[in-house]
Length: 247
Ligand code: NDP
Image 1 (tube, helix red, strand yellow):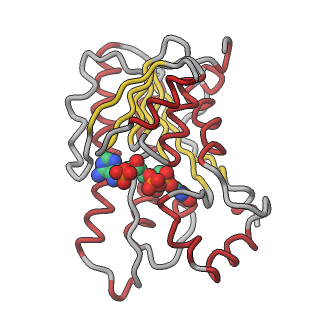
Image 2: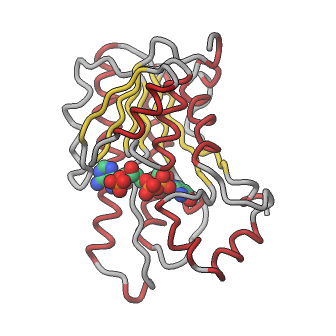
Image 3: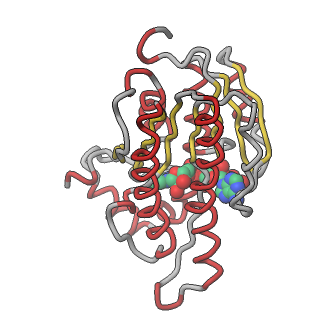
């Protein structure tokens, strides 16, 4: 790939790249020419194999965001110009019953780790005077309330806010910070919803595209947001949702 959508010569780190949306983004970034580090709390062998099969370049790194500061030493001197903050968890329970542990675990992984990983990445770029791109994986629950996922909704609203403040502070330094809000995507994260026939039906009935999204449906937008074609896009949260929010 060449031109405005190429990531040739770029080095990218994708968190939570062993499966789901993170895996699809890692594969797509590599296909667009980036050298990709697949980061996660377990091995990313399947993702590495997919990238190798397509002739791309990738390696892996263990990072567990149970410690939100896990990536503080990851970027210094390593040459990254792309960061995809994708790792995330979800806990479901009625708000009246929700535990402090389910609040803290989700906020730590989905929001605190995202901020401090971005900070470590941004510091390195600012010190080098280099431009780059951060893409945060937000959610429809960055805009809507959802049901039975209070810490997830709080975290994803926070992701939208953090995306905007970092864009405000770093845009003039050539660092594009944006987010993608995926709709309902068939991954481990949504297994419980798809296994519940009533929830599954009500979700499908509301999606104009009339199907669950696939992880690959998200990947092209991530490539675009990291590419020169998106150089004047800062602080946006782009829904990729089969039309859900238009409904
Ligand atoms: P998955 O559960 O398939 O993927 C989540 C990824 O995050 C996995 O790689 C997971 O690793 C990783 N992860 C979780 N906790 C940690 C941790 N402590 N340290 C490092 N990595 C961790 O779901 P998705 O692919 O759907 O989720 C990816 C992102 O997309 C998340 O931020 C999610 O909130 C968001 N999203 C998903 C939607 C959907 O409909 N699927 C909709 C909107 C947003 P492991 O495999 O070890 O658990």
